[in-house]
Length: 132
Length: 132
DNA sequence: CGCGCATGTGAGAACCATTGTCAACTGCGA
DNA sequence: TCGCAGTTGACAATGGTTCTCACATGCGCG
Ligand SMILES: [Mn+2]
Ligand SMILES: [Mn+2]
Ligand SMILES: [Zn+2]
Ligand SMILES: [Zn+2]
Image (cartoon, rainbow over all chains, first blue to last red):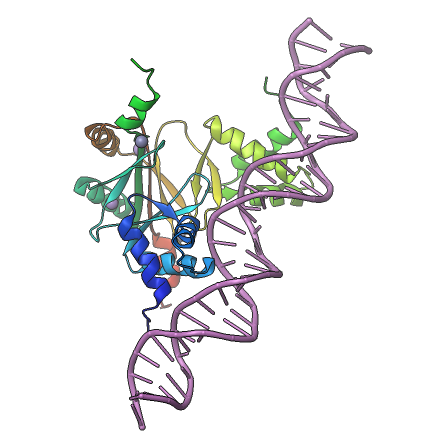
């Protein structure tokens, strides 16, 4: 049976104040900075539990680091800025159907999928452009 | 300027004999077993170089481990069996266009994407089914 | 209200894939 | 063949994540 603890509440609260994806380490540091001490192990357990419950969405960076963000419960994917990390939730029913169909055609069952789109957002392109 | 060395040749050769995805560690062990000694660091550098050249395709496991496999040069995605790791290369031009369009609509440029489909293959389902 | 205990916590160690170091080695153009 | 930039590999270091285990505590129950 799952208990409501100060620590779990604090970790969940962080994601209410934060946009985009953040690592367990980042959440831990932020809590520390606020004077809200929560052990690193506990933060890891908390974000994983939240992700299992579907309250957080998770992705892996190129380096294999796990990032989490609060997300809507409905199935969706992410459009992520390579430069600033800004993310946009996107949906594509047609893609969903395509994935299921392709898997079915090859005899695969219990189908799931991961899909992420990467690019450089307009703000980051403007920032990089020569002034003037 | 890139040199042809015994080690790089050996690593590349492994992927000619192997189906599916394999880790650097795995490749290293296999070379060792064949009496073909190649340093672990060298194997890591070799698979990364091959991936950069587009000769190997790479994905990350749930645990963040990098896996590589020889793949065709044309853009495609993977349908992977959760149980045995068997993979099928799949293509979906419509998905490509959708991803580009979605990114464009949100002002993102230099767009790329990752897409993987997971499921249980027919063979694995048969194996799991009660005998008789 | 407490009690009891299953759950949760956290400091620190362990894990383990990956990367860095650097002296020795070698492919290959000149 | 020479010279050296590119390459190697034993080993150390990194760093994110997980494990350990003694201690703390939420909460159902009496
Ligand atoms: Mn989807
Ligand atoms: Mn694609
Ligand atoms: Zn951006
Ligand atoms: Zn299978």
